Length: 237
Image (cartoon, rainbow, N blue to C red; front, side, top):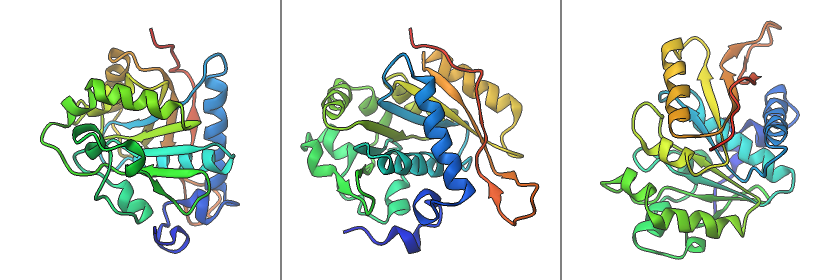
């Protein structure tokens, strides 16, 4: 069983402090994504960043929690087959995960881990393979996503930084939409533009941008991890 997320997972603010402004910001993000996909169903979603440390894994994890809290049967998948982190975030085993399902053809339900949060399930990355991009681009991956779509209301992916390797771009092309994460004071404008261009080249549908690590002006002593903007949305062709 997973360890308690209330005590050991301070980054999961949507669970640990659901009444906080940060938790409310993630719920607002969830709502904005729903409005962005009002004409088309949004079931597969990923969050993309240009580089490591921009807050992508924290954003996708909290967003997954808000979907589960809304009553949707939600699956959070660690698609970072190079430096996975979700098993640390949620305090669960990474012994069996996505790679094992795709390579060894374990049944996908054998790799599911129930979280402490009702309606939220986790699929960790599993064993680290020598060829992550090829595995993610495989027909087996497409088949898996089709199977999962019949079982879950929302499937969210954590992925490596987009500008580091192609893995995230591969997954973005399979998802219904992508939210970009930019870290205030750290992500250079040129990197943000390159991130957007890379996603557009992969024909990803960009819903908007999360600007995190923005200092609040109220002097309350913490960061407002979230601001959301429109202006990048486009339909997949």
